[in-house]
Image 1 (tube, rainbow over the protein chains, first blue to last red):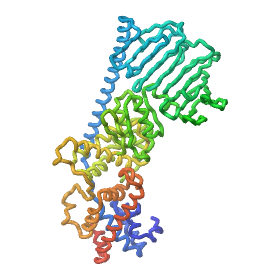
Image 2 (cartoon, chains in turn green, cyan):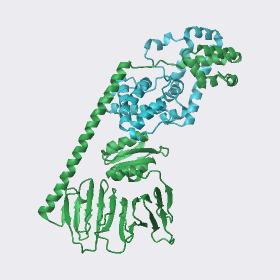
Image 3 (spheres, rainbow over the protein chains, first blue to last red):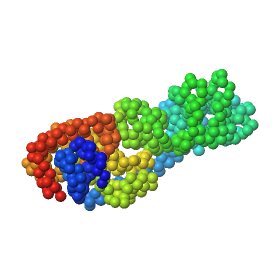
Image 4 (cartoon, chains in turn yellow, cyan):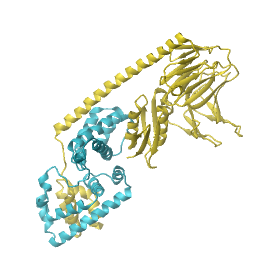
Length: 388
Length: 204
Protein backbone atom coordinates (compact mmCIF):
# COMPACT_ATOMS: atom_id res chain seq x y z
CA UNK A 1 0.00 0.00 0.00
CA UNK A 2 1.38 3.38 -0.97
CA UNK A 3 0.91 5.71 1.97
CA UNK A 4 2.76 8.79 0.74
CA UNK A 5 -0.24 10.63 -0.61
CA UNK A 6 -2.20 10.08 2.62
CA UNK A 7 0.24 12.32 4.53
CA UNK A 8 -1.34 15.49 3.20
CA UNK A 9 -4.92 14.31 3.65
CA UNK A 10 -7.63 16.13 5.59
CA UNK A 11 -10.45 14.16 7.23
CA UNK A 12 -12.70 14.85 4.23
CA UNK A 13 -9.99 13.66 1.85
CA UNK A 14 -9.95 10.33 3.67
CA UNK A 15 -13.75 10.07 3.53
CA UNK A 16 -13.79 10.74 -0.20
CA UNK A 17 -10.86 8.47 -1.06
CA UNK A 18 -12.10 5.35 -2.87
CA UNK A 19 -9.28 3.14 -1.57
CA UNK A 20 -9.69 4.30 1.97
CA UNK A 21 -13.44 3.64 1.83
CA UNK A 22 -12.76 0.12 0.63
CA UNK A 23 -10.39 -0.50 3.52
CA UNK A 24 -13.03 0.67 5.99
CA UNK A 25 -16.10 -0.91 4.43
CA UNK A 26 -14.96 -4.31 3.28
CA UNK A 27 -14.70 -6.92 5.96
CA UNK A 28 -11.32 -8.51 6.59
CA UNK A 29 -9.45 -5.27 6.04
CA UNK A 30 -8.90 -4.24 9.65
CA UNK A 31 -5.27 -5.34 9.22
CA UNK A 32 -4.80 -2.79 6.49
CA UNK A 33 -6.37 -0.15 8.68
CA UNK A 34 -3.93 -1.03 11.49
CA UNK A 35 -0.98 -0.67 9.10
CA UNK A 36 -2.32 2.70 8.04
CA UNK A 37 -2.64 3.94 11.62
CA UNK A 38 0.84 2.69 12.56
CA UNK A 39 2.46 4.39 9.60
CA UNK A 40 0.59 7.65 9.84
CA UNK A 41 0.59 8.49 13.55
CA UNK A 42 0.18 12.16 12.76
CA UNK A 43 -3.05 11.41 10.88
CA UNK A 44 -4.54 9.26 13.66
CA UNK A 45 -7.21 11.80 14.52
CA UNK A 46 -8.32 12.37 10.92
CA UNK A 47 -8.44 8.65 10.20
CA UNK A 48 -10.38 8.05 13.39
CA UNK A 49 -13.10 10.55 12.47
CA UNK A 50 -13.24 9.39 8.84
CA UNK A 51 -13.69 5.76 9.93
CA UNK A 52 -16.56 6.66 12.23
CA UNK A 53 -18.32 8.77 9.62
CA UNK A 54 -18.05 6.06 6.97
CA UNK A 55 -19.15 3.39 9.38
CA UNK A 56 -22.05 5.60 10.43
CA UNK A 57 -23.07 5.94 6.79
CA UNK A 58 -22.97 2.23 6.10
CA UNK A 59 -26.33 0.48 5.74
CA UNK A 60 -27.44 -3.13 5.51
CA UNK A 61 -28.73 -4.31 2.15
CA UNK A 62 -32.11 -5.68 1.34
CA UNK A 63 -31.93 -8.93 -0.56
CA UNK A 64 -34.11 -11.62 -2.09
CA UNK A 65 -33.54 -15.31 -1.38
CA UNK A 66 -31.62 -16.94 -4.24
CA UNK A 67 -34.49 -19.30 -5.14
CA UNK A 68 -36.91 -16.39 -5.44
CA UNK A 69 -34.55 -14.63 -7.84
CA UNK A 70 -34.28 -17.77 -9.98
CA UNK A 71 -38.07 -18.12 -10.09
CA UNK A 72 -38.46 -14.51 -11.12
CA UNK A 73 -35.91 -14.98 -13.92
CA UNK A 74 -37.90 -17.93 -15.22
CA UNK A 75 -40.98 -15.74 -15.34
CA UNK A 76 -39.08 -13.40 -17.66
CA UNK A 77 -38.14 -16.32 -19.91
CA UNK A 78 -41.77 -17.45 -20.01
CA UNK A 79 -42.92 -13.95 -20.98
CA UNK A 80 -40.25 -14.01 -23.68
CA UNK A 81 -41.61 -17.19 -25.27
CA UNK A 82 -45.11 -15.72 -25.43
CA UNK A 83 -43.70 -12.65 -27.14
CA UNK A 84 -42.15 -14.71 -29.95
CA UNK A 85 -45.37 -16.60 -30.56
CA UNK A 86 -47.30 -13.33 -30.71
CA UNK A 87 -44.97 -11.92 -33.35
CA UNK A 88 -45.37 -15.02 -35.49
CA UNK A 89 -49.15 -14.61 -35.53
CA UNK A 90 -48.86 -10.96 -36.35
CA UNK A 91 -46.84 -11.60 -39.48
CA UNK A 92 -49.18 -14.35 -40.60
CA UNK A 93 -52.11 -11.95 -40.28
CA UNK A 94 -50.49 -9.22 -42.34
CA UNK A 95 -49.83 -11.65 -45.19
CA UNK A 96 -53.52 -12.51 -45.29
CA UNK A 97 -54.42 -8.84 -45.37
CA UNK A 98 -52.20 -8.19 -48.38
CA UNK A 99 -53.69 -11.05 -50.33
CA UNK A 100 -57.16 -9.81 -49.41
CA UNK A 101 -56.52 -6.31 -50.66
CA UNK A 102 -54.98 -7.59 -53.87
CA UNK A 103 -57.98 -9.68 -54.83
CA UNK A 104 -60.35 -6.81 -54.02
CA UNK A 105 -58.62 -4.68 -56.63
CA UNK A 106 -58.97 -7.39 -59.20
CA UNK A 107 -62.62 -7.93 -58.36
CA UNK A 108 -63.67 -4.30 -58.55
CA UNK A 109 -61.59 -3.62 -61.65
CA UNK A 110 -63.05 -6.59 -63.46
CA UNK A 111 -66.64 -5.91 -62.52
CA UNK A 112 -67.01 -2.19 -62.99
CA UNK A 113 -64.29 -1.33 -65.47
CA UNK A 114 -64.42 2.33 -64.56
CA UNK A 115 -61.74 4.98 -64.87
CA UNK A 116 -61.44 5.38 -61.16
CA UNK A 117 -60.53 2.23 -59.29
CA UNK A 118 -60.92 2.58 -55.58
CA UNK A 119 -59.80 -0.30 -53.46
CA UNK A 120 -61.17 0.71 -50.09
CA UNK A 121 -63.49 3.36 -48.75
CA UNK A 122 -60.74 5.39 -47.08
CA UNK A 123 -60.53 9.04 -48.06
CA UNK A 124 -58.27 9.20 -51.15
CA UNK A 125 -55.63 11.33 -49.43
CA UNK A 126 -54.90 8.46 -47.02
CA UNK A 127 -54.10 6.07 -49.85
CA UNK A 128 -51.19 5.82 -52.17
CA UNK A 129 -52.38 7.06 -55.55
CA UNK A 130 -51.13 6.25 -59.01
CA UNK A 131 -52.27 8.84 -61.52
CA UNK A 132 -51.78 7.48 -65.01
CA UNK A 133 -50.82 9.45 -68.08
CA UNK A 134 -54.31 8.97 -69.53
CA UNK A 135 -55.96 10.41 -66.41
CA UNK A 136 -56.96 7.16 -64.68
CA UNK A 137 -56.47 7.14 -60.94
CA UNK A 138 -55.64 4.01 -58.99
CA UNK A 139 -56.02 4.30 -55.25
CA UNK A 140 -54.10 1.74 -53.20
CA UNK A 141 -54.93 1.34 -49.53
CA UNK A 142 -52.26 -1.16 -48.51
CA UNK A 143 -49.45 0.13 -46.34
CA UNK A 144 -46.75 -1.07 -48.72
CA UNK A 145 -47.68 -1.15 -52.38
CA UNK A 146 -45.93 -2.24 -55.55
CA UNK A 147 -46.51 -0.96 -59.07
CA UNK A 148 -44.91 -2.71 -62.07
CA UNK A 149 -44.86 -1.19 -65.54
CA UNK A 150 -44.41 -3.70 -68.33
CA UNK A 151 -41.54 -3.10 -70.74
CA UNK A 152 -43.76 -1.48 -73.37
CA UNK A 153 -45.38 0.70 -70.71
CA UNK A 154 -48.93 -0.45 -71.45
CA UNK A 155 -49.50 -3.05 -68.74
CA UNK A 156 -49.44 -2.03 -65.13
CA UNK A 157 -49.62 -4.50 -62.26
CA UNK A 158 -50.61 -3.19 -58.84
CA UNK A 159 -49.72 -5.21 -55.72
CA UNK A 160 -48.68 -8.18 -57.90
CA UNK A 161 -52.21 -9.24 -58.77
CA UNK A 162 -54.42 -6.60 -60.28
CA UNK A 163 -53.82 -5.36 -63.80
CA UNK A 164 -54.59 -2.00 -65.31
CA UNK A 165 -54.04 -1.23 -68.96
CA UNK A 166 -53.41 2.05 -70.70
CA UNK A 167 -52.59 3.13 -74.23
CA UNK A 168 -48.86 3.52 -74.86
CA UNK A 169 -49.24 6.21 -77.45
CA UNK A 170 -49.91 8.67 -74.68
CA UNK A 171 -46.89 10.87 -74.09
CA UNK A 172 -48.13 12.17 -70.77
CA UNK A 173 -46.56 11.46 -67.42
CA UNK A 174 -47.54 9.09 -64.65
CA UNK A 175 -47.46 10.14 -61.03
CA UNK A 176 -47.05 7.91 -58.02
CA UNK A 177 -48.08 9.74 -54.86
CA UNK A 178 -47.28 8.07 -51.53
CA UNK A 179 -48.82 9.75 -48.46
CA UNK A 180 -47.35 9.71 -44.95
CA UNK A 181 -47.80 6.33 -43.36
CA UNK A 182 -47.38 4.43 -46.67
CA UNK A 183 -44.50 3.20 -48.78
CA UNK A 184 -44.39 2.03 -52.37
CA UNK A 185 -42.23 0.26 -54.91
CA UNK A 186 -42.32 1.18 -58.58
CA UNK A 187 -40.73 -0.86 -61.35
CA UNK A 188 -40.27 1.41 -64.35
CA UNK A 189 -40.73 0.10 -67.89
CA UNK A 190 -36.97 -0.13 -68.59
CA UNK A 191 -36.25 -2.06 -65.41
CA UNK A 192 -35.22 0.67 -63.00
CA UNK A 193 -36.43 0.00 -59.47
CA UNK A 194 -37.65 2.84 -57.27
CA UNK A 195 -38.61 2.45 -53.62
CA UNK A 196 -40.67 5.45 -52.51
CA UNK A 197 -40.73 6.40 -48.86
CA UNK A 198 -43.64 8.00 -46.99
CA UNK A 199 -44.69 11.46 -48.14
CA UNK A 200 -43.10 11.19 -51.59
CA UNK A 201 -44.06 11.72 -55.20
CA UNK A 202 -42.45 10.33 -58.35
CA UNK A 203 -43.30 11.66 -61.81
CA UNK A 204 -42.26 9.45 -64.74
CA UNK A 205 -43.27 8.51 -68.28
CA UNK A 206 -44.67 5.06 -69.16
CA UNK A 207 -41.78 4.56 -71.57
CA UNK A 208 -38.68 6.69 -72.00
CA UNK A 209 -38.82 7.76 -75.64
CA UNK A 210 -36.21 10.52 -75.97
CA UNK A 211 -32.44 10.46 -75.66
CA UNK A 212 -32.56 10.61 -71.89
CA UNK A 213 -34.53 9.02 -69.10
CA UNK A 214 -35.87 11.67 -66.73
CA UNK A 215 -37.93 11.38 -63.57
CA UNK A 216 -38.98 13.99 -61.01
CA UNK A 217 -38.87 13.31 -57.28
CA UNK A 218 -40.27 14.95 -54.18
CA UNK A 219 -39.56 13.21 -50.88
CA UNK A 220 -37.31 10.20 -50.36
CA UNK A 221 -36.54 7.35 -52.72
CA UNK A 222 -34.00 4.61 -53.26
CA UNK A 223 -33.14 4.11 -56.92
CA UNK A 224 -31.63 1.01 -58.51
CA UNK A 225 -31.07 2.25 -62.04
CA UNK A 226 -30.72 -0.05 -65.04
CA UNK A 227 -27.49 0.69 -66.87
CA UNK A 228 -27.87 2.16 -70.35
CA UNK A 229 -24.97 4.32 -71.55
CA UNK A 230 -26.90 5.57 -74.55
CA UNK A 231 -29.79 6.88 -72.47
CA UNK A 232 -28.52 8.55 -69.31
CA UNK A 233 -30.89 8.61 -66.34
CA UNK A 234 -31.67 11.90 -64.62
CA UNK A 235 -33.38 12.54 -61.29
CA UNK A 236 -34.74 16.04 -60.90
CA UNK A 237 -35.84 17.65 -57.65
CA UNK A 238 -36.95 21.18 -56.91
CA UNK A 239 -33.39 22.27 -56.10
CA UNK A 240 -31.04 19.99 -57.99
CA UNK A 241 -30.73 17.62 -60.89
CA UNK A 242 -28.56 14.54 -60.89
CA UNK A 243 -27.12 12.41 -63.64
CA UNK A 244 -26.90 8.72 -63.00
CA UNK A 245 -24.46 6.24 -64.46
CA UNK A 246 -26.15 2.86 -63.67
CA UNK A 247 -26.25 2.81 -59.98
CA UNK A 248 -27.94 2.45 -56.62
CA UNK A 249 -28.50 5.49 -54.41
CA UNK A 250 -30.85 7.06 -51.92
CA UNK A 251 -32.21 10.59 -52.37
CA UNK A 252 -33.87 12.70 -49.69
CA UNK A 253 -35.59 15.76 -51.11
CA UNK A 254 -38.58 16.63 -48.95
CA UNK A 255 -39.85 20.08 -49.96
CA UNK A 256 -40.67 21.05 -46.39
CA UNK A 257 -37.21 20.14 -45.12
CA UNK A 258 -34.41 22.52 -45.74
CA UNK A 259 -31.85 19.75 -45.92
CA UNK A 260 -31.50 17.52 -48.98
CA UNK A 261 -29.21 14.55 -49.28
CA UNK A 262 -28.01 11.83 -51.63
CA UNK A 263 -26.25 8.68 -50.50
CA UNK A 264 -24.54 6.55 -53.10
CA UNK A 265 -24.49 2.79 -52.54
CA UNK A 266 -22.80 1.74 -55.77
CA UNK A 267 -21.93 3.20 -59.19
CA UNK A 268 -21.49 6.88 -59.89
CA UNK A 269 -23.68 9.98 -59.93
CA UNK A 270 -23.15 13.66 -60.48
CA UNK A 271 -25.25 16.59 -59.36
CA UNK A 272 -25.99 20.09 -60.57
CA UNK A 273 -27.88 22.64 -58.55
CA UNK A 274 -30.83 24.09 -60.50
CA UNK A 275 -30.18 27.54 -61.97
CA UNK A 276 -26.69 27.44 -60.57
CA UNK A 277 -24.14 29.81 -62.04
CA UNK A 278 -21.53 27.22 -61.27
CA UNK A 279 -21.49 24.84 -64.20
CA UNK A 280 -19.13 22.26 -62.77
CA UNK A 281 -20.74 18.99 -61.81
CA UNK A 282 -20.18 17.46 -58.39
CA UNK A 283 -19.39 13.75 -58.49
CA UNK A 284 -20.17 11.26 -55.78
CA UNK A 285 -18.38 7.97 -55.13
CA UNK A 286 -19.88 4.93 -53.39
CA UNK A 287 -20.23 5.30 -49.61
CA UNK A 288 -20.36 9.06 -49.93
CA UNK A 289 -23.16 11.36 -48.91
CA UNK A 290 -23.88 14.73 -50.50
CA UNK A 291 -25.87 17.16 -48.39
CA UNK A 292 -27.39 20.41 -49.49
CA UNK A 293 -29.11 23.06 -47.45
CA UNK A 294 -31.76 24.90 -49.41
CA UNK A 295 -30.50 28.29 -50.54
CA UNK A 296 -26.87 27.29 -50.38
CA UNK A 297 -24.83 26.96 -53.54
CA UNK A 298 -22.72 23.94 -52.66
CA UNK A 299 -23.05 20.30 -51.85
CA UNK A 300 -21.20 19.10 -48.77
CA UNK A 301 -19.63 15.70 -49.34
CA UNK A 302 -19.05 13.31 -46.45
CA UNK A 303 -18.05 9.67 -46.21
CA UNK A 304 -20.56 7.28 -44.68
CA UNK A 305 -19.40 4.04 -43.11
CA UNK A 306 -22.58 2.15 -43.62
CA UNK A 307 -25.05 3.00 -46.39
CA UNK A 308 -27.50 0.51 -44.94
CA UNK A 309 -28.56 3.15 -42.44
CA UNK A 310 -29.97 5.18 -45.31
CA UNK A 311 -31.59 2.34 -47.21
CA UNK A 312 -32.96 0.12 -44.42
CA UNK A 313 -36.36 1.79 -44.70
CA UNK A 314 -37.12 -0.20 -47.85
CA UNK A 315 -37.06 -3.36 -45.75
CA UNK A 316 -39.28 -1.70 -43.18
CA UNK A 317 -36.52 -0.85 -40.71
CA UNK A 318 -35.35 2.48 -39.46
CA UNK A 319 -31.67 2.46 -38.65
CA UNK A 320 -30.01 5.41 -36.99
CA UNK A 321 -26.50 6.14 -35.89
CA UNK A 322 -25.60 9.11 -33.76
CA UNK A 323 -28.94 10.68 -34.54
CA UNK A 324 -30.58 13.58 -32.72
CA UNK A 325 -33.84 12.43 -31.11
CA UNK A 326 -35.96 15.22 -32.74
CA UNK A 327 -34.63 14.27 -36.21
CA UNK A 328 -35.46 10.63 -35.65
CA UNK A 329 -38.95 11.55 -34.44
CA UNK A 330 -39.50 13.61 -37.57
CA UNK A 331 -38.76 10.54 -39.66
CA UNK A 332 -41.01 8.36 -37.52
CA UNK A 333 -43.86 10.86 -37.78
CA UNK A 334 -43.67 10.60 -41.58
CA UNK A 335 -43.74 6.82 -41.64
CA UNK A 336 -46.77 6.66 -39.38
CA UNK A 337 -48.45 9.89 -40.48
CA UNK A 338 -48.82 11.25 -36.95
CA UNK A 339 -47.87 14.51 -35.32
CA UNK A 340 -44.98 14.25 -32.89
CA UNK A 341 -43.86 17.30 -30.99
CA UNK A 342 -40.75 17.57 -28.87
CA UNK A 343 -40.19 19.53 -25.71
CA UNK A 344 -36.72 18.16 -25.17
CA UNK A 345 -33.78 20.01 -23.69
CA UNK A 346 -30.75 20.45 -25.95
CA UNK A 347 -28.60 18.04 -24.01
CA UNK A 348 -30.52 14.87 -24.94
CA UNK A 349 -27.94 12.33 -26.06
CA UNK A 350 -27.68 11.23 -29.66
CA UNK A 351 -28.88 7.67 -30.09
CA UNK A 352 -28.05 4.51 -32.01
CA UNK A 353 -30.34 1.69 -32.98
CA UNK A 354 -32.74 -0.05 -35.31
CA UNK A 355 -36.51 0.04 -35.20
CA UNK A 356 -38.94 -2.32 -36.86
CA UNK A 357 -41.45 -0.12 -38.66
CA UNK A 358 -43.85 -3.02 -39.01
CA UNK A 359 -44.51 -2.57 -35.29
CA UNK A 360 -47.37 -0.49 -33.95
CA UNK A 361 -46.56 3.17 -33.56
CA UNK A 362 -46.72 3.11 -29.77
CA UNK A 363 -44.36 0.17 -29.64
CA UNK A 364 -41.87 2.10 -31.75
CA UNK A 365 -42.31 5.20 -29.57
CA UNK A 366 -41.83 3.07 -26.44
CA UNK A 367 -38.59 1.87 -27.96
CA UNK A 368 -37.35 5.38 -28.73
CA UNK A 369 -38.28 6.60 -25.25
CA UNK A 370 -36.49 3.64 -23.72
CA UNK A 371 -33.30 4.15 -25.71
CA UNK A 372 -33.17 7.92 -25.45
CA UNK A 373 -34.22 7.96 -21.78
CA UNK A 374 -37.10 10.28 -22.52
CA UNK A 375 -40.85 9.88 -22.15
CA UNK A 376 -43.90 10.82 -24.17
CA UNK A 377 -47.58 11.40 -23.69
CA UNK A 378 -50.53 11.35 -26.02
CA UNK A 379 -52.46 14.59 -26.37
CA UNK A 380 -55.47 14.12 -28.59
CA UNK A 381 -54.09 13.10 -31.96
CA UNK A 382 -50.50 14.06 -31.30
CA UNK A 383 -47.64 12.71 -29.26
CA UNK A 384 -45.37 14.90 -27.17
CA UNK A 385 -41.87 13.84 -26.20
CA UNK A 386 -40.24 15.35 -23.15
CA UNK A 387 -37.35 14.88 -20.81
CA UNK A 388 -37.82 12.21 -18.22
CA UNK B 1 -19.54 -3.71 -5.62
CA UNK B 2 -17.77 -6.87 -4.75
CA UNK B 3 -17.17 -8.71 -8.00
CA UNK B 4 -16.48 -12.41 -7.98
CA UNK B 5 -12.94 -12.95 -9.13
CA UNK B 6 -12.39 -13.74 -12.80
CA UNK B 7 -15.82 -12.67 -14.09
CA UNK B 8 -16.01 -9.34 -15.79
CA UNK B 9 -19.72 -8.46 -15.73
CA UNK B 10 -19.25 -5.93 -18.54
CA UNK B 11 -17.96 -8.72 -20.76
CA UNK B 12 -20.93 -10.94 -19.88
CA UNK B 13 -23.21 -8.03 -20.69
CA UNK B 14 -21.55 -7.47 -24.08
CA UNK B 15 -22.02 -11.13 -24.85
CA UNK B 16 -25.74 -10.68 -24.31
CA UNK B 17 -25.92 -7.42 -26.28
CA UNK B 18 -24.00 -8.77 -29.27
CA UNK B 19 -25.33 -12.34 -29.40
CA UNK B 20 -28.60 -12.21 -27.50
CA UNK B 21 -27.27 -14.86 -25.14
CA UNK B 22 -30.01 -15.13 -22.49
CA UNK B 23 -27.80 -17.27 -20.29
CA UNK B 24 -25.36 -14.36 -20.09
CA UNK B 25 -28.23 -12.07 -19.18
CA UNK B 26 -29.39 -14.46 -16.45
CA UNK B 27 -25.96 -14.04 -14.85
CA UNK B 28 -26.33 -10.29 -14.98
CA UNK B 29 -29.82 -10.56 -13.55
CA UNK B 30 -28.79 -12.70 -10.59
CA UNK B 31 -25.65 -10.64 -9.98
CA UNK B 32 -27.31 -7.23 -9.93
CA UNK B 33 -30.70 -8.21 -8.53
CA UNK B 34 -30.01 -7.29 -4.92
CA UNK B 35 -28.39 -4.00 -5.88
CA UNK B 36 -31.61 -2.91 -7.63
CA UNK B 37 -33.91 -4.57 -5.09
CA UNK B 38 -32.19 -2.68 -2.25
CA UNK B 39 -32.04 0.61 -4.12
CA UNK B 40 -35.73 0.38 -5.04
CA UNK B 41 -36.81 -0.22 -1.46
CA UNK B 42 -35.11 2.95 -0.35
CA UNK B 43 -37.46 4.78 -2.70
CA UNK B 44 -40.71 3.07 -1.83
CA UNK B 45 -42.09 0.70 0.77
CA UNK B 46 -44.00 -1.11 -1.97
CA UNK B 47 -41.88 -4.22 -2.25
CA UNK B 48 -44.12 -5.80 -4.89
CA UNK B 49 -43.72 -2.77 -7.10
CA UNK B 50 -39.93 -2.92 -6.79
CA UNK B 51 -40.05 -6.59 -7.83
CA UNK B 52 -42.26 -5.78 -10.82
CA UNK B 53 -40.03 -2.91 -11.88
CA UNK B 54 -36.95 -5.15 -11.97
CA UNK B 55 -38.92 -7.56 -14.18
CA UNK B 56 -39.96 -4.72 -16.49
CA UNK B 57 -36.40 -3.46 -16.79
CA UNK B 58 -35.09 -6.85 -17.90
CA UNK B 59 -38.04 -7.57 -20.21
CA UNK B 60 -37.32 -4.24 -21.91
CA UNK B 61 -33.63 -5.00 -22.10
CA UNK B 62 -34.43 -8.21 -23.98
CA UNK B 63 -37.02 -6.50 -26.16
CA UNK B 64 -34.78 -3.60 -27.15
CA UNK B 65 -31.46 -5.44 -27.11
CA UNK B 66 -30.51 -4.41 -30.63
CA UNK B 67 -30.94 -0.76 -29.77
CA UNK B 68 -28.86 -0.84 -26.60
CA UNK B 69 -25.22 -0.02 -27.02
CA UNK B 70 -22.35 -1.55 -25.16
CA UNK B 71 -22.03 0.24 -21.84
CA UNK B 72 -18.89 1.31 -20.07
CA UNK B 73 -20.21 0.85 -16.57
CA UNK B 74 -22.98 -1.66 -16.16
CA UNK B 75 -23.59 -0.64 -12.55
CA UNK B 76 -24.44 2.90 -13.54
CA UNK B 77 -26.45 1.85 -16.59
CA UNK B 78 -28.65 -0.57 -14.67
CA UNK B 79 -29.18 1.83 -11.78
CA UNK B 80 -30.24 4.73 -13.99
CA UNK B 81 -32.44 2.53 -16.20
CA UNK B 82 -34.02 0.95 -13.13
CA UNK B 83 -34.66 4.31 -11.45
CA UNK B 84 -36.43 5.64 -14.53
CA UNK B 85 -38.61 2.55 -14.79
CA UNK B 86 -39.38 2.69 -11.05
CA UNK B 87 -40.80 6.20 -11.29
CA UNK B 88 -42.76 5.30 -14.42
CA UNK B 89 -44.27 2.32 -12.61
CA UNK B 90 -44.92 4.37 -9.47
CA UNK B 91 -46.76 7.02 -11.48
CA UNK B 92 -48.78 4.38 -13.29
CA UNK B 93 -49.79 2.86 -9.98
CA UNK B 94 -50.76 6.27 -8.58
CA UNK B 95 -53.27 6.71 -11.37
CA UNK B 96 -54.96 3.39 -10.73
CA UNK B 97 -55.32 3.26 -6.95
CA UNK B 98 -57.01 5.24 -4.21
CA UNK B 99 -55.09 8.14 -2.73
CA UNK B 100 -54.92 6.68 0.78
CA UNK B 101 -53.06 3.70 -0.56
CA UNK B 102 -50.47 5.71 -2.45
CA UNK B 103 -47.07 4.15 -2.35
CA UNK B 104 -44.87 6.64 -0.56
CA UNK B 105 -42.08 8.07 -2.57
CA UNK B 106 -38.92 9.39 -0.97
CA UNK B 107 -35.37 8.32 -0.39
CA UNK B 108 -34.74 6.60 2.93
CA UNK B 109 -31.02 6.23 3.44
CA UNK B 110 -31.08 4.30 6.68
CA UNK B 111 -33.88 1.88 5.92
CA UNK B 112 -32.71 -1.56 6.94
CA UNK B 113 -33.94 -5.09 6.33
CA UNK B 114 -33.34 -5.79 10.01
CA UNK B 115 -35.68 -3.30 11.72
CA UNK B 116 -34.26 -3.87 15.22
CA UNK B 117 -30.81 -2.68 14.25
CA UNK B 118 -32.02 0.62 12.90
CA UNK B 119 -34.03 1.17 16.08
CA UNK B 120 -32.69 4.51 17.25
CA UNK B 121 -32.41 3.50 20.91
CA UNK B 122 -29.89 0.83 20.08
CA UNK B 123 -27.58 3.13 18.19
CA UNK B 124 -24.50 4.70 19.76
CA UNK B 125 -24.53 8.43 20.31
CA UNK B 126 -22.22 9.10 17.37
CA UNK B 127 -24.06 6.80 15.00
CA UNK B 128 -27.31 8.46 15.99
CA UNK B 129 -25.88 11.94 15.33
CA UNK B 130 -24.73 10.89 11.86
CA UNK B 131 -28.14 9.42 11.16
CA UNK B 132 -29.85 12.62 12.29
CA UNK B 133 -27.54 14.71 10.07
CA UNK B 134 -28.37 12.54 7.05
CA UNK B 135 -32.09 12.54 7.79
CA UNK B 136 -32.05 16.35 7.68
CA UNK B 137 -30.65 16.33 4.11
CA UNK B 138 -32.90 16.45 1.06
CA UNK B 139 -33.87 13.16 -0.57
CA UNK B 140 -31.59 13.95 -3.49
CA UNK B 141 -28.57 14.65 -1.27
CA UNK B 142 -29.16 11.40 0.61
CA UNK B 143 -29.40 9.54 -2.67
CA UNK B 144 -26.15 11.06 -3.95
CA UNK B 145 -24.24 10.01 -0.81
CA UNK B 146 -25.77 6.56 -0.97
CA UNK B 147 -24.87 6.02 -4.62
CA UNK B 148 -21.35 7.40 -4.26
CA UNK B 149 -20.28 5.87 -0.93
CA UNK B 150 -22.38 2.76 -0.64
CA UNK B 151 -22.62 1.74 -4.31
CA UNK B 152 -19.45 3.30 -5.77
CA UNK B 153 -21.27 4.99 -8.67
CA UNK B 154 -19.25 7.75 -10.36
CA UNK B 155 -20.28 11.40 -10.15
CA UNK B 156 -20.96 11.47 -13.88
CA UNK B 157 -23.33 8.54 -13.64
CA UNK B 158 -25.07 9.88 -10.55
CA UNK B 159 -25.55 13.20 -12.31
CA UNK B 160 -27.08 11.41 -15.29
CA UNK B 161 -29.27 9.20 -13.14
CA UNK B 162 -30.65 12.07 -11.05
CA UNK B 163 -30.78 14.51 -13.95
CA UNK B 164 -28.55 17.12 -12.32
CA UNK B 165 -25.18 18.55 -13.28
CA UNK B 166 -21.96 16.83 -12.26
CA UNK B 167 -20.90 20.04 -10.56
CA UNK B 168 -23.96 20.34 -8.34
CA UNK B 169 -23.72 16.64 -7.56
CA UNK B 170 -20.12 17.11 -6.43
CA UNK B 171 -20.82 20.25 -4.40
CA UNK B 172 -23.86 18.75 -2.79
CA UNK B 173 -22.08 15.69 -1.44
CA UNK B 174 -19.10 17.68 -0.20
CA UNK B 175 -21.31 20.11 1.66
CA UNK B 176 -23.29 17.29 3.23
CA UNK B 177 -20.23 15.32 4.30
CA UNK B 178 -18.67 18.42 5.81
CA UNK B 179 -21.69 18.83 8.07
CA UNK B 180 -21.70 15.19 9.08
CA UNK B 181 -17.96 15.20 9.71
CA UNK B 182 -17.94 18.32 11.90
CA UNK B 183 -20.78 16.91 14.01
CA UNK B 184 -18.81 13.70 14.40
CA UNK B 185 -15.71 15.69 15.34
CA UNK B 186 -17.52 17.48 18.17
CA UNK B 187 -18.56 14.23 19.78
CA UNK B 188 -15.25 12.48 19.28
CA UNK B 189 -13.22 15.38 20.69
CA UNK B 190 -15.07 15.01 23.99
CA UNK B 191 -14.39 11.31 24.17
CA UNK B 192 -10.85 11.14 22.90
CA UNK B 193 -9.30 8.26 21.13
CA UNK B 194 -10.65 5.41 23.21
CA UNK B 195 -13.61 5.21 20.87
CA UNK B 196 -11.55 3.90 18.02
CA UNK B 197 -10.23 1.02 20.15
CA UNK B 198 -13.74 0.06 21.16
CA UNK B 199 -14.76 0.17 17.53
CA UNK B 200 -11.92 -2.15 16.57
CA UNK B 201 -13.13 -4.78 18.98
CA UNK B 202 -16.81 -4.51 18.10
CA UNK B 203 -16.60 -4.11 14.36
CA UNK B 204 -15.48 -7.47 13.09
